[in-house]
Image (cartoon, rainbow, N blue to C red; front, side):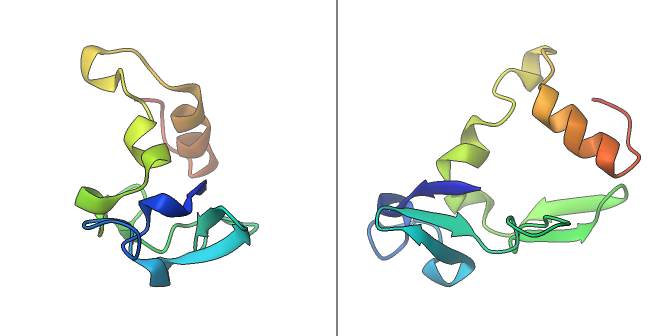
Length: 92
């Protein structure tokens, strides 16, 4: 998951911890663990399908903030459903 460097803690108070990212290109960084064959964000804690949480929820990057913005009103997110299916979980 890539996002602009301006979202890092080194660039703004409350930003994403720099140590949890790797550089992609000059202006982009990526959350560690999200570019592997079995992607798992370094900030994800717990067991998928049982209970998980984001350890940096309050400082998560914009792609996470934008993910499934309409879920609270019952509108699904295809990317979320695909991710859940990879782990044998039903769509929300």
